[in-house]
Image (cartoon, rainbow, N blue to C red):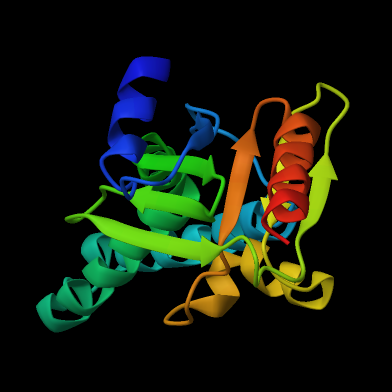
Length: 184
């Protein structure tokens, strides 16, 4: 993984840049804080729509109502289970880098997307660390973190740049701070 991650991030470097760190988010299925609300909501909403469509099939057989319910049942399956797989897939295709000049976030989800933040002009960034030393570094003000962590509520809004679910988050945080000091 390290070699693949490093090579993907190095493709984005200028000739004068020095790569200080490269990494990826945690892989696999994971729960987030927002799931404390989303799981019960999706189960209740999903139960209603599944029961509704099932009742229509067994009862009236109204073809229009059954067809009308199918998109809702599809959304239900996404909310209950599919979103976890989409999130895992998204994290698997995301790569992070810290150079002596900038923060780099590369996403290869649907084509290549590159986000770059200048180390010298980077003002607010926060570290949220867990007991296993993994964590998230968010490159924005703390007030906007709630908004960034609740994907359901920010559909269509730009994502706040972050190094999400990385190992040794404090170490990476210190690498960024040191790069800022040296660039000043």
